Image (cartoon, rainbow, N blue to C red; front, side):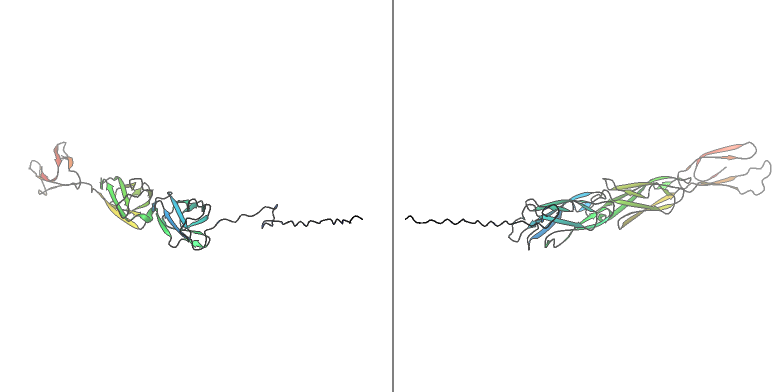
Length: 280
């Protein structure tokens, strides 16, 4: 008799594991940004510490992990500033560095910047001086410094510089005057550090130029009109009698170029250019 052989079917148990994503929209997964590990150190520097209005500077953040090695490429770093704008506000690292651009805008002041990633943050903010905030000295001149009595136009020039005497471009300079009319009351300094306007006046004036917290003044004078006074010591001259006339002139500016006397009887006398006192 042959032995019986029994066959028992093998049941295979298959377990399916589903990956559940945080986002339920169409089954897509939300990507979590790579952030700096705990105890990383972030330092930032600016390519420029002084900016004109509307100027730009590169802001560079360096991320070093606790081990002393640069953060992984793609580590997300966020930047903030108290003045101006950052483009972009977030950037990822490459070789441990993330770079954004600071755009100064039109407002003067001090921009304070920090960077952070995860729990790592810049310990000490850096500052960038914008526009008038960098001005430590202002000088102003008038050309010419004296106008005729009838009035004239003067060029007012203000030079703006920093602590080291370097000319500052793009600094808003405001002008004011005690008399006359200014061609422009607010001018940005050029590459030479100079901002200029014009003053039209027929009166003595003091012009003030202000950049940031610094100011300077210049005086513009006006020549008084010349005067001529004719007198005689003979109070009641008679016909045929010689009479001496005293001619006294004052000319605060240039000498009087021509003086003549009309005696009223058709006769006249030219005294030419005259200053001081003469007799006729």
